[in-house]
Image (cartoon, rainbow, N blue to C red; front, side, top):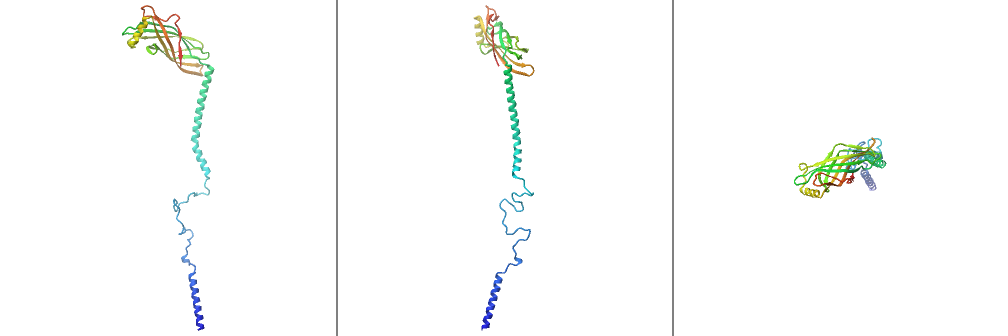
Length: 277
């Protein structure tokens, strides 16, 4: 009996050892879960969103060293700043040239001190004057003296456009003097202008003829003689300036004697004219 019990204890102990050995046995090589060399693990996590398998991750650079970010930024900024820098330089140059030209013109104007020419009416006459309805005829002749008061500038006169007005703004006749002339410093010249009007070339309204006839009946008629032309102020070959001028010789009284159709200003009826630029 003692031998049987000892035998049973040995058997049970052997079974426990075999069961423990079976339960704690290490996995065999056939059940090894470690990946083979060179292959990705089958238990690895999936790639993050926006990244695909087989492509390099963000920031990956295939060469030894990636270029510094500051260098790329500086090169890009330099390329972007080149056009704006050129534009600023161009506009700055234009502004400086404009200021220089304007300043030099002012300086030369102050140094040369240009003065406008002086115009004076010496004689103004009317012939063949007829303001009886329905016709109107008249011939005007004006003689003016023009003087250049400048001491450093020559004045060149272009084509003269002459006008005779009645009252303020009613045109009676116009003519063009195509011969230009010039005045040296401190010299004077004479302008002779001839104009004519008739009912065929210049239709005058009846109310104007009525007023002209009434004034003529009182012995005198007032006319306005005006001129428009271009002038050039010149100092040698290095400075010149062009100006448009308007000369107004206003309220010239022409006196008629008796029933004559010819009239003239009084002996001392000459007057200076206004000059505008």
